Length: 474
Ligand code: BGP
Image 1: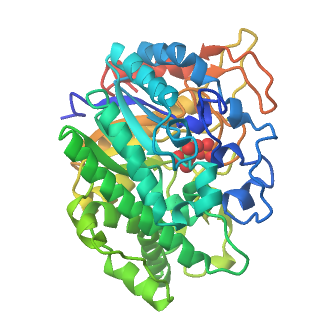
Image 2: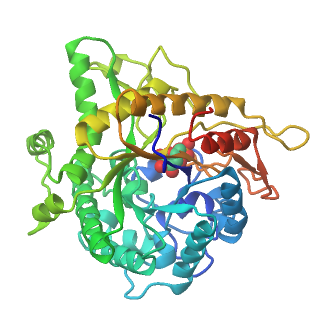
Image 3: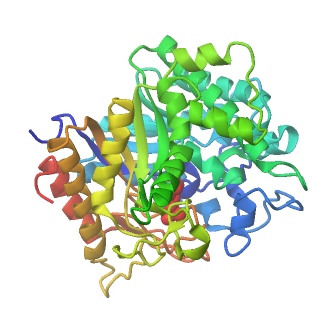
């Protein structure tokens, strides 16, 4: 009973939210560097800003992040002190190929990640690497239209071949695209899409999604060829949809909303487009740009495990116009009257994690990996600079308990758990520093003030104990 003996406890980050050093080491500009904060952020991340000039003149917190690029040793030492077995991080594509379409990679970028992986290994920490976490070189967006263009598959192929070859023996666990379903909700952030006036957005989105799905299968193929030890996962922004009421109309709405997200994983894990998606796309006149060999590739090279983020469950209604909505992790939802919410309106539902795990495991029967979960909050250090984040501990403890129930009572096969933003970093939805998830406080504000000093919070010592006892003591 209990969790696996080799359960992979750890934390997760993404390059563009913590590295900073956006113009160091030969790195090129990426979509994530030009996402403004404030009210312009949503239209930009949705691909609706036509006049966007992609300049790098403005200061945004993500450009400096928490300066992990220059302080990774100190940060990894703190992760090791907590007892991390794994550390999930992402590669900044434009560090490896600054423009995206070069023939040769940038050695300085490759060396940086090699140093990071070796530093992890020094402490026995297994790296878990997201190949793209919401990032795409600006040059690929300007010149090729990002993922709407089939050529981007070839550039991604060059990237993954370079990574799998260079880091053979150093990295074994890879995720092809972070939250692949986010392309539906934030297409500039998810796939570098900028829409033309009046074009059929859904056509462009599904075309780009097809390219990402083919690229993901190709990456799986290449990873296994280069090193059969490699384990490849897909990554879903998960969260079960509940029907708003038992009315069959609401139940159908919830099923349809779930399917819209599961569609991606159905392709990546089962190897083919599900019939419900083919029907819907056909009805709407959306064409999927299948090229010769795509179907075989998708069928043959399915993922080894299913990873996902979970922040909250969601609610769907057959009559959404008459319902109050709430914020959530990228996907908005009808408000659930039975749940409390974070300061950002994300509703808190630990039992929903167990329900979501069961749903995914029933559907795919492959090992699961929870690679994001956590509470974004404003932390106020006391006069000694110490953050007593009992609210975060409560959130995480209740989710870990629900996760254990899914394993122990329902029989889900779970590889590991990496909570989001294990060290404070920049928020993806708001672009700000003040929404924090970490076990480690970083002295930095939205405007670039602060010493960047790292200080363990109360949750740091709590999580250390959780890991030490393999989740027994929460
Ligand atoms: C997910 C992203 C992460 C992360 C997290 C928390 O969607 O994969 O990058 O940021 O959400 O979201 P936020 O930072 O907006 O609170």
